[in-house]
Image (tube, rainbow, N blue to C red; front, side, top):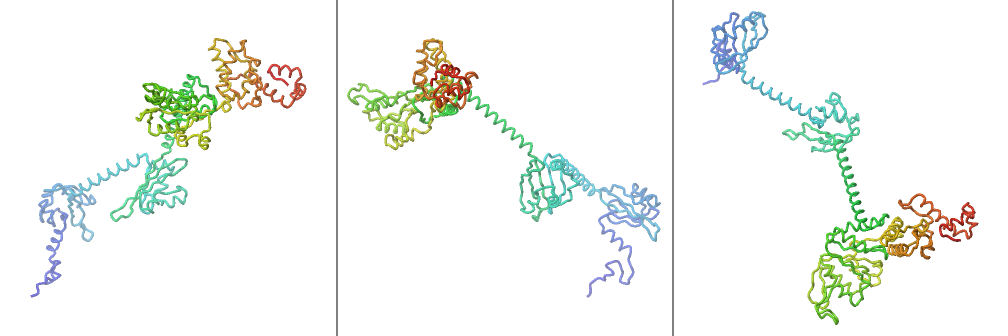
Length: 592
C-alpha cells in the first residue's frame, strides 16, 4: 500500500485539485512566532493566528474594538488613510507587545489592515542592553579621552582607528589627519620616525620604545590584542611624555650634587677647624690631601704607614689619627725604634716575665704592646727595628697575640699599629734589611707627608705662625722685617718643619731688637740659595702688594747678581743708577 502523501495535499490542495485556502493560510500564520491579525474595513477580524488568540482572545468574526479597544482607534485611523504605518504598545495577558499596523491592498484598493504583534519584553531587554553598552562606551570614551598618556588604537593592518587628545598634544597632530591612515604611510610622510605598531605586527609581542619627538622624550608601549583564533585584531599603543620626569630627575640629581657639595664643604670646614685646633698649617694641595687621608683613615682600624722625610711632622699625623679615632680615649704609645738599644727592643716592646734574663725585675714587666692595649701603638722609625723583632711584630699583626720574653703563654692584645719612617723600605727589602711580608702588612694604607719643598704655599704661613707663637711663649714682641722674610722664603729648609721651628725660636730668643732683620739671620740661611726665589710660582694670599713687590725686587736683584759682577754693570742691565743699586743691595742684604 502506498501511504505517501501527494505534494499538492501538503501545501493545501485536495486530491481533486481544489485549494483549501482557509486551512492553508491559517496553518501558515499559526506557524509564525509573532502575532498576526487582519481586519476588514469595518474592523471585523478576518484572520487571527494562534499567538494573537492566546494573548488577546481575538478570534475571526469578532470586532477589533471588542478585544483590543486601545488598538482599534489607531487601526481605524489607518483604514481611513489618515496615518501611515503605525506602531503602538498594547498589553497582553502575560506580556507587552509592540503592534505595527499596515494597510492591506487589493488592486490598489485598501480592503483592510494587518496588525503584526511583536513581544516587546525582548526588545526592551535588548534596548536596556543597548543602553548599557552605550553608557559603557561613553564611559570608556571619557576614560580614554581624559588619560594624560597618549593612546593609539590600530587594526591588524596598522591602520589608525583612533587616537585620544593627549596623543594629539604629545605628537602635535590632529585626529582627523591621521585616523584612517596607515602607519607605514605616516612614517613615509615623516610624521613619525618609528612605529611601535609595526614592530608589534612583525614580532607579535609587546614592544617598548624610547623616542624623541620635537625635543620631547617619550616612552612608547605597544600591546597586541588577539582573537580566539590567535590573530591580531588590534594594537593598542600608549605614549608617556617623560620629558618632565627626566627634567625632575636631573633637578633631583643636581640637588643631590649640591647637597654633596655642601656636605663636603662642611666636612672640609670641620677638618680645617680640627687642624686649627691642632695648630696644623696646610695650604698646599699635597699637604691638604695627606691630612684628608689621615682624617679619613682615622675612622677605621686599618694599619697606617706614614712616609716622608725627617722633620715633616709624621708624629703630628699620628696624633691627628688618634684624636679622631674611636680609640681617642685610649692610650697612644709612641716608640722611636731607633732610640732603643737592639738588645732591649724586644723586652721593651713585648715585655718579660720573672727571671727572663739577668737584671730583670722580679715581678716581670709589661711591654709597650700591653700598655697600649685598646689604644694605638705608634712605631716611629720602623725601619730601625731589628729583624728578630720584625718577626715577632709580624706574628702579632697576623694573630693579635704577643709573647713576653721568658713566657710560654701568649697574650691577646687589641692594639692598632701606626708606623712611620723616612727611609725607603722597598730598597731595604731588596737589600734584605727589612722583611717583605712585614712591609706589606704595614703598608695597608700609606700616607706620604710632603716636605717643605713640596708645599711652598705653606712656607710663609708657617714662618709667621711660629714667630708669633714663640714670641707669645717667651713673652716678647718680635716680628720679621720684609727682607728677613724674603730671605727665609728663599731658604730650602733641608730639615723641613723641625728646622723651621728651631730657627724661628732661635730668632725670637736671640734677636735683641723688636724687628728681626736680615742681619739677625744665621749666616748659612742668609747665604742660602736664592735662585728659587727668583721666580716664585705663586705668592701666598696673606702677603700684601708692597710685600710682593719688595720680594720680587729682591729676587730680581739676586738673580741679576749671578750675571753681573759689579754694581755699575748691574745698574746698566736693570736700567737704574748705580746709587740706586747700592741702596737696594744694602736694603736687602745682598752684595756683589
